[in-house]
Length: 331
Image (tube, rainbow, N blue to C red; front, top):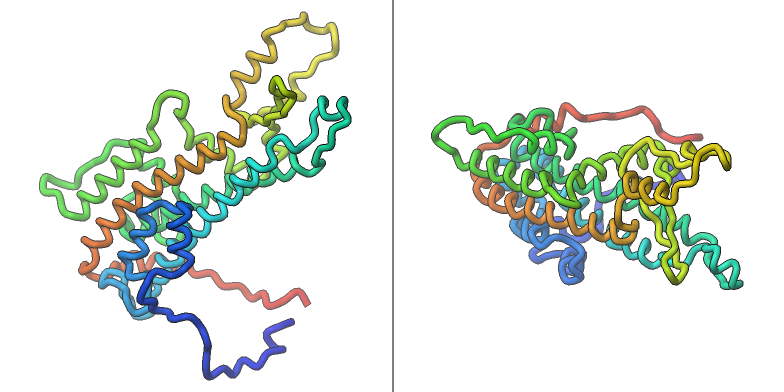
């Protein structure tokens, strides 16, 4: 079907109200099932459920472009969290269902597709969770456009916020404005969530590496390593570096002396120390916590910015990112 096949001379449209008077069902269900951070839900409510005629003054441009953009981001973050929970559940559900040599020797049944599904879900999860961070960066850009190097409305990325967190906060002057107070708190939240020590050190850097390689080059770029437990159930582990190709470490028999510690040292140096099921659960929790703290700050910022003048520079930046192409159909 093509658009030309439809009667587009439309005079009436039947749809849900664009200005709801109460939280929409999708939002209350996500809240009740703990699928989204509590302060994301609070932000949605604070924005008056993003009714089309309820934009605050600082986002109330003639075409409601900024408010609509912010709504799309917030709704996108909710949907991404919902999908991420589904993917983590799938990764966990496929654990132990795939092939193992012990199952083969015992003649036990196994799901030939389980391991592939698990790795595919892992890839989708990485991309999906990182999209949450990038969408949050866009939310931040609406409020602090021009305050963070590289963070512009319509083309913001969380990598810009990560770079912002690496440096010290530099106050604009002796007198701290309400905006700068929120800006400084944002820096504090990012530092506390990203600049961690211990086993979780550089969790974001590895996550960022995963996203870039898995999204652009595919799953084979990260060869995961399988280990069986005492019962023969196989667990998969992802590398902590790139490039890493275990095949490059193979040598003909007898070429190098036998070393019983070689494999142990190799995997402990080059692989994450938890399997992809527990890593996926931990990563989801880490992103959830970061976004919850981020939107706790955004709630306060939204309330204080509500009566500010229209953010002209943010609006101009978004309009400048407009892209349109001549494609209509493949036939």
